[in-house]
Image 1 (cartoon, rainbow over the protein chains, first blue to last red):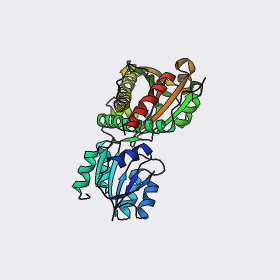
Image 2 (cartoon, rainbow over the protein chains, first blue to last red):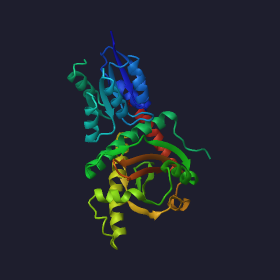
Image 3 (spheres, chains in turn red, orange):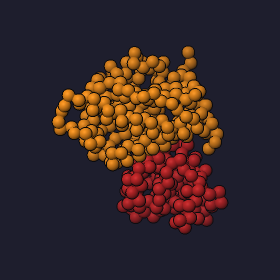
Image 4 (cartoon, each protein chain N blue to C red):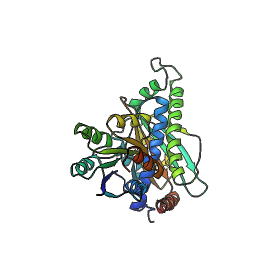
Amino acid sequence: MPTRVLVVDDSKISRKMIIKSLPKDWDIEISEACNGKEALDGYHAGKAEVMFLDLTMPVMDGYEALEILKKEGLNTFVIVVSADIQPKARERVISLGAMDFIKKPIDTDKVNEVLKKFGII
Amino acid sequence: MNMAALSQDQTETLQEVVNIAMGQAGDSLARILDVFVELSVPRISLVEVAKVVPTVCDLLDDCDDIFAVRQAFHNNEQLRGESIIIYGEAGCSDLADLMGYNTDEITADDFRTESELLLDVSNILSGACLNGIANQLKTELSYSAPSIMAQHAALQDVMSHENLPWNKALLVEVNFGLENSDFKSHLLILLTEEAIDSLGHSLDMFLENL
């Protein structure tokens, strides 16, 4: 059964870049969301065994989405993919339960490394 | 005359390119000030220069007195423009504190100190942001020295047509705020019509290589 992957970013280009960086032989079912609120909707609909989450988004940003997910028990692997590369941004998302942080522009090798590190692939 | 314009795909690509560059600029500022820098979603719009003031007023929420620093840039093709960083007056003393300036004792050199401070910060933000954009679009930019455009001035006076020698402006607006501070800055990037066409071509190349 394919792994359900949710890609959350307000930028269509960025979502495209993230999807293109995923391993070609990874059996997945991809859904997309444009902000934190849509990410939570996708999560509640069971579309997010793995979530790639941007931070700076309109409507609801990635931090707020992570806080809510944490309160709800966080039953998903969240990998933050963000242009906000401040060390404190990384610390904050890890403290909110994100598994890892990948800086933009996203790099295929880094995605592979993170997915392998957590036994996702 | 037809307005030079970017397609929707080009605009979205530029928004993401600016987003990445803005993150690099924010990181540079955060490391120097040792404070968390709050970033906004970049906004991009193409406007006639005559409409820059009302558009920027809308973007800034209010139009109190401001400080502004400008810096011209160009590459060896047609990309040519100017960055303008606008600071609200309220947050500048917070910034001075963070940079280690003594804001308790007002001296005759205050204006000079303030100018140095704002030029320093502008160099960091503008340089990191523009370099970030240029690197992604595989071009190199040359810069003029940044200069103070206005101090304690009204936005309407600063952004007058006489001060902006462009027909139209691609307003690329990114905001930087400092956590627990009133400091806010707004970086505007203004481009010539020819530069907008050149930028569109660079964005197409970037998209093709995705």
